Image (cartoon, rainbow, N blue to C red):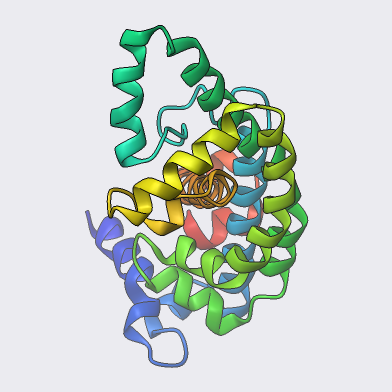
Length: 228
């Protein structure tokens, strides 16, 4: 029980120190440098694992947590089309959207790893003390805009192969003008790019939480030292 209380203090210590680590952390033998290395290792492992999970066939399509569906109004409209024998074409479009995301995600690996390697000690401590969304917030701040630029042409090439994609943009544009759909969702290429990034950051967060929960299982000495 005493050990559990002690380790819980170690876990929250970064949130209690405005600049450096609290005395409990030093007492546990974890320096700021070690903590930063541990956080970088955890984030890099999580990012690489997330890219591996999503950037393959079925990575988005077969995962209900990140599967990309038609947006709002169009999803409802698609249900009506099923009664007119259009279900196959709708399924084809949804499949193409998810395949496009799967094709784009591997492009993220190098940029995510670079963001991790360049993070400062201050960034690392912010991730440790920033709560459940701190990992996602870090990657979004560092990589979302440039990754969006990289993803968009890949998604565009993939969706252009489906003739229904052009019709999606036409119908979605009219729906947006009528206030039935967000402007950001009215272009299939931009919509899929945004959803691909959302899914990527979601899975990175999940992978990082797994590492925190079982640092010993990762086989990394630095992760065991910081999170174990």
